[in-house]
Length: 107
Image: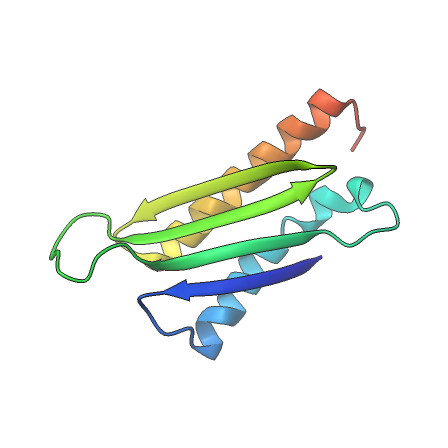
């Protein structure tokens, strides 16, 4: 699985990139039955939604995954960027499981 990361309105530090790869990479075990002779790519975007608000959920994480022409998408907004990334990972896992059940793929 290949993970592409884009940062919006914040700096993508090596630690942050490593954290995203670790968390989003953990969904790969759910994708193994779908990876038949091809590599699956996940596009992840993280960032701040605003530069001037003082409170509220202004960190955003989004993941887009293309499987057999269908796009599986998860997004989250939180006050903490790391919580948003974990929430996206959890949502992506649930979406992949639903997709596999709908497709009749045994896992």
